[in-house]
Image 1 (cartoon, rainbow, N blue to C red):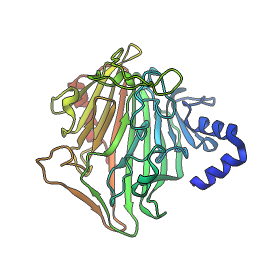
Image 2 (cartoon, one colour):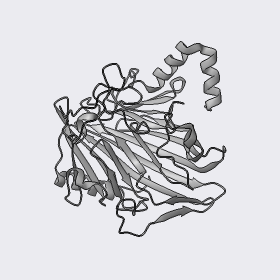
Image 3 (cartoon, one colour):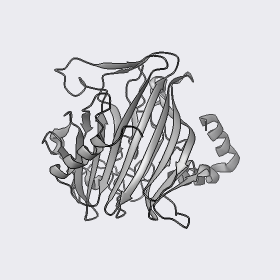
Image 4 (cartoon, helix red, strand yellow):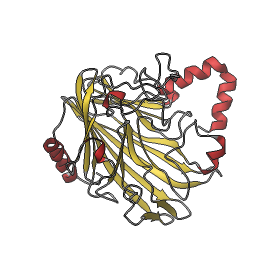
Length: 362
């Protein structure tokens, strides 16, 4: 849906109707129609979303509202129902940081594509900066498939720049699965350049990201502004580490905030949310360009893998770039793992080995 069409709908329906539409697009996962067994996907086209359930329990939703500059998975839950993603800016929760409004759920984009920033674009981007921003526009859903052990969603999108042209076409397939205390999301994403070369220049602003729940952040070291119970920004900064329990575990043995800018095949984040243990991990497949990836993992809750940057993390390195010629494609494969327990480094290593041994893009 174009911004012009969305604006027309708002005018026609009135402010109340527009608010109801936005709420439907960004609300937590709805109910699962009976019978609801195994992994069930529900396409709710009117709400611009596809909801995902495992044995009747909400897992996540693929959403593409006009209020975002890219499609995302939001929210993401553990098998026990623990929400592991931040609510802000779509549905702010008390005590969250109102920063980086472009960090929503899970997304996959980049900060320098032919000079355009797809990573940092949001509705909060100043008008003066819009000319250098890119938007990933949802184009269609090509597969919605439920099953006893896994569900699949295939979608298409276009990487568009302000003049209305498309730099790349994207095809993405999500495979959702889960049992017991674990949930997984396998994402296969193919980018194909259109009629001109597409170059990804070296920057730390990328790429395969999740913005996690406030409880999974590392304890703050300085006073911050938070969101109040009404969803508004507080006016007085404060230091509040109540219930903040996050700890990164890197495949190279580093932990905590020291993992930022390191390179490795996997990264785990452990902690507790509402007193319940949880681990969130991102696994990088050996077939990926840039493997093993660099990690843009920050203590304030940004958890991202970046296979396209280098000097942005290590100034001693020469900058790198990656170019797709017209019609050329590249495919990435990643796994998001969520468990209702705190996994050890040894357990995460085994998870990575199993993922690495799994079949390519089948």
